[in-house]
Length: 370
Image (cartoon, rainbow, N blue to C red; front, top):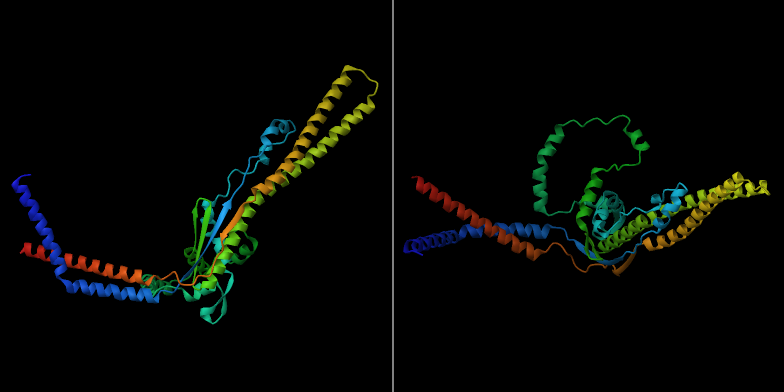
């Protein structure tokens, strides 16, 4: 390295050091921004509603097995039965989509309709939807920002004319039940619950975390969500297999009727053709015997498959082992006041550094332009 390059490097280092010293020399600005950050941190820490978190752990043991329908597919094809319809849907409800299940609007809407006793409101009984609609828990800083952001929409809403509803809307709602009609209160409650009900998975171990404004309610909601999740998954798995069993039972009844018809045709032909030795009669008897054998084999195979499906129904039922039940938390999980205060002071000091840097750079630019 040459002497000139070494000198330039030292000069640049000295310039950076001088810049840093100039930034921290203006301590008043740093202290001012740090105090502002501390003040905002105190507002956030002491106005944020308390949240209590309750956790539970479950172990999912899923068993499944392939169907043996493929072994008799060719035989059933001769009888005109599509055995692929007997195969259960291969798309399984895995634990990876459990978060999507508990965060679905249908699931959370039902949770929001449940009533709880709120000790913080003198033992008043309310649904979660009513509580969040009335309280709208948040800190004063966030409420102020939301008010400022939503103020233009509120003002424009005062002067805007609401769109007229169609006259036949009530009739349409009464006639159709395949959709959700959510109110703004329900949508707000669903959004609040979605932030407070979380599920984590590590392998087959599933952890359910529920945060609520009171410790007892947190444990109650955790237990309720866990119970309904298990019921939903079990019904999904068992329901699919039950439909499979119902389909097989229908096929068994059809084949039993065909088997009885083939048996009666063969018996009637033999009774009416006793003593005949013509080749035509033998061919007809062989044909009826073949139809009878096919009907008997398919009927017998379907009966066996019905028994296997009943066994498969038990195997398809998911097994949930509750390793740790939901417990009543002894202390709040939010807000973390020390962390909020430390972060607020650090953010205030950082803004002070940026402010001093801005002042130094603007003063140098103004000086160079003179």
